[in-house]
Amino acid sequence: MSKIDPDLKKKLLKESQAPFKGLRRILWIAFSGSAFLGLVIMLSKLASGGELKQENILIQVGACILFPTLLFFDRNKD
Image 1: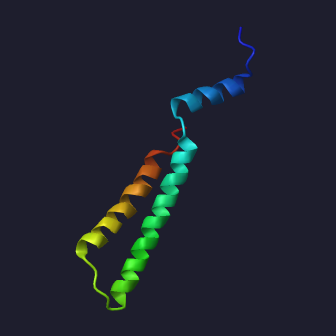
Image 2: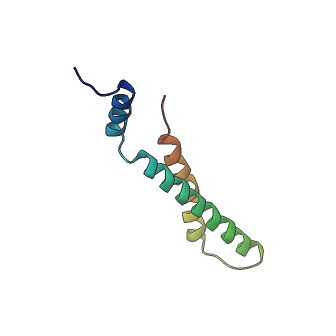
Image 3: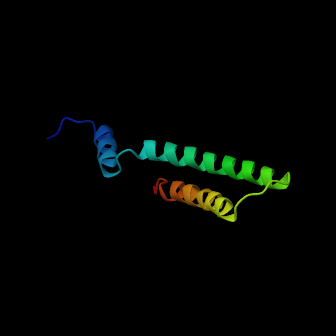
């Protein structure tokens, strides 16, 4: 018989199935925040009369969609 606490064993098993989950979630949150901040800055520049390339705005919108989606799919499924 194993002398490991059942709660610890469950936690270790969960961590072995999804390593670095906490780090990934922190990165998805940081990248999402950066994408939204970049989009706000681009839109404010556009509103003030500045010119922007359409590709740059599309990249920012894509990042604003991609990173929160990755964060959503990385959630706990319990």
